[in-house]
Amino acid sequence: DAKTTQPNSMESNEEEPVHLPCNHSTISGTDYIHWYRQLPSQGPEYVIHGLTSNVNNRMASLAIAEDRKSSTLILHRATLRDAAVYYCILKGGATNKLIFGTGTLLAVQP
Amino acid sequence: DSGVTQTPKHLITATGQRVTLRCSPRSGDLSVYWYQQSLDQGLQFLIQYYNGEERAKGNILERFSAQQFPDLHSELNLSSLELGDSALYFCASSVDYGTPTYEQYFGPGTRLTVT
Image (cartoon, rainbow over all chains, first blue to last red; front, side, top):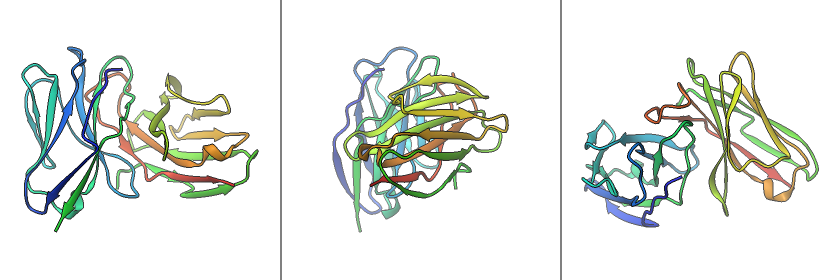
């Protein structure tokens, strides 16, 4: 399974944009980039995924580098509810299992 | 609410005992996954079932077993429990098993404490 590297922690102010980076230099051509987050005392929840093009949904945007060796999850206006651990995960192959790394703990200050 | 339910919410038991954790997937989802989250190991994939058949195995101990029933609910059985088995156990479900675009929906978890 290809590995991802994320900063251990980041801090943001409420209502400001947040850019969460992820490096995945060993990504294969068929790997999708998925982001999940885990709010305190809850199970992980899906945020967004992409393959090559940038993606937007109601929760966030995903910017993927042209060489696909890195990506950035963008929260356009952070709220206190966005404080969570964010996981960048590569998914491919015949199964759908998620291999979680250590993620980035995002703190949002009021 | 993800639509995935897990019971019980909390479980306290003694070393050497056996417990069963139950999961009901979202309506329409055929795949069920089990994950373990402990402080030292983080979130780890244990096992996956699709429509009653085992599809993938992760770091699941031999003392642990799982199954998925015809109504698609799943049970994770943990036996000969040790202190190190204390963790949060999450169940997740998805529509498919082999398509990397499908997201997984996680339940609220069962917190197991072994004393």
